[in-house]
Length: 410
Ligand code: SF4
Image (cartoon, rainbow, N blue to C red; front, side, top):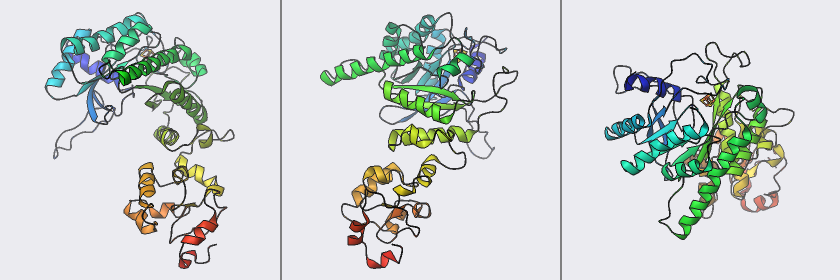
């Protein structure tokens, strides 16, 4: 099998790993414009300084000794197999890099022989690129759960990002669909990465020339919709992983069925919108101060497919609104549907000098129609006045708002 054939098979096999920012999008040129994109081969990721870089995204091999039911590369799958040698991956990366196709490498693999053996092969690629070819591009390596601490430690010295996949939201899910995998082993690898990174960051604070360890941190991927596990449980797991191992990102991948799949798997794909709602909720937990428990309830553990989670929360908490844009603390403004965290920062700095009107929100590109039920500005108070949030007693607002603004609403 020549290199081109291997690239076709192993770049295609890698498209199921969502642990970098974009992949899987396929777009054909229309014959009039320039370029097209394939659903495999190149993906994008963000460096620690915020640059978006294109990566060669491949598997070292799609042979795998494990039998994860949801995975097309599992041992019992009847697919065409291929395997690169580490030196072939090194050469491919350098060739693509020199032609300016890519700025880095995303390398994963099926489990060959054992976690240690597989990790050694991945490590060999990263180490060769860095030490023999002085490759300065971005490297994202898969950290194989169960590989020895020594190998993970070395991998972090050569890779910008490491990711150990949690695969499924709960241990029960793994028992059901990925019998060789254990949450404890996966989390122990994540813990190892987190500790090594903490130590390296501490060393660099004392001595800036000390070696970096996985400068872009660690991420993970979770397949959703392959089991009946609820969004509430998924978000609970996400909270645990972010809190315990300081993950930079969790990537949620909706399960999609494939031909002749195991009977334990659902026949229908997870709705794309569910994946989207999980990302929105994840974002709300990381940047808006929401907790997993607030975004769903015991009675209704699924995220709404028709409405974003911030709006759902706002509708079920009328006692929290309206929020006074000129007086409310940051954490209250962050809960207003239609106002993003960047605009919250802008509002906080503008209101030091100027009391905001609806027009000011328009200038910040806020969709005013959407925020009207939730906000008080100098010239607006929602018509249906729910219980006012404790953080902004109405007597204070009275003192500053022009009389015309109240137009009988209070
Ligand atoms: S270990 Fe990874 S590649 Fe192998 S079957 Fe499981 S998910 Fe697929």
